[in-house]
Amino acid sequence: MRVKGFTLVEMVMVMVVMGIIFLGITGFIELGAKGYVDTVDRQKVQNQARFAIEKLSREIRHGIPNSFATVTNSVGDKCLEFYPIARSGFYSQNEISGKVDFIIGNQGERLPTSNSESMVINPSRIEDLTSETQSVSLANCRNSSNDDCTEEEKSSGVFVYSVDDDFGSHSIARRYYSFNGKVTYCISTTGMITRNGISVADGINHNQSSFSYLDATLQRSGLVHLDFLFTNPEQDEQSFYKHDVQVLNVP
Image (cartoon, rainbow, N blue to C red; front, side, top):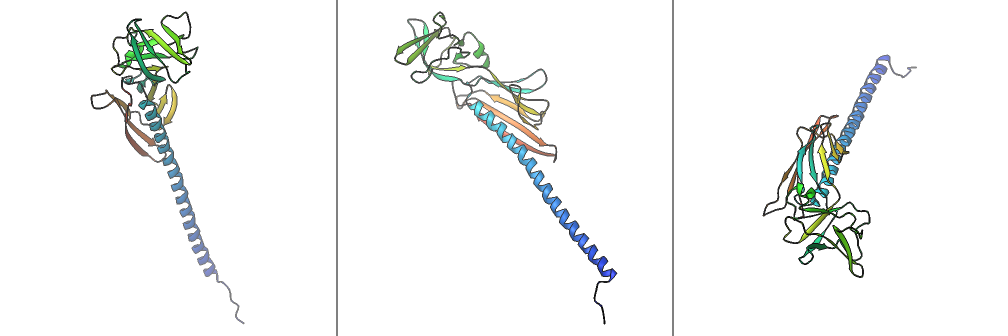
């Protein structure tokens, strides 16, 4: 009786074929896993870039007009400086008292007792926000002994503030802005975007990234141009972003 079975040659051939199949499957899985990891890394860089650009855009749009400047600091960081708006509104000139009168918001709204805001009228450059001829401190306006800034309740819940009219020029639209402090975004030499020293994004190429500011013209408001080159060292990839942000406000 003939016994059926595998010969040694057949067994070796089966093992070789199975080994080839397993190697192919392993290579396919490895390729898929590598593609997934590369996609995640690429998405991380792009999400980071989009977050930084969106954050910058929102703050720039609502910055005080003509309060922008680009500088390079002592360590070589490329920086954009500007003053965000804390409050805005309209004022009137009281020719009898020589004061500028204004309110700060809705009925019943008052300046805080402890307040660090300053007010600026008709700024034409960033230095005007620290100039005594274009800006004035709103600190201690609710202090009855303070003559530089006073508070008066004209009617129920309507508070009017007055400051000395020592401004070098006035807004055609009688518009004022108040602010708390300066914001500085920098492209650092270490490859990060920072806001007042706190990291917002990393992986940016310092040499090929920059901020630029175009002054307002008769046809448009001020314009901030962002040139960002983000790099992915894991894949040796680069993503270049060009973005313009228009300052929405006018003096």
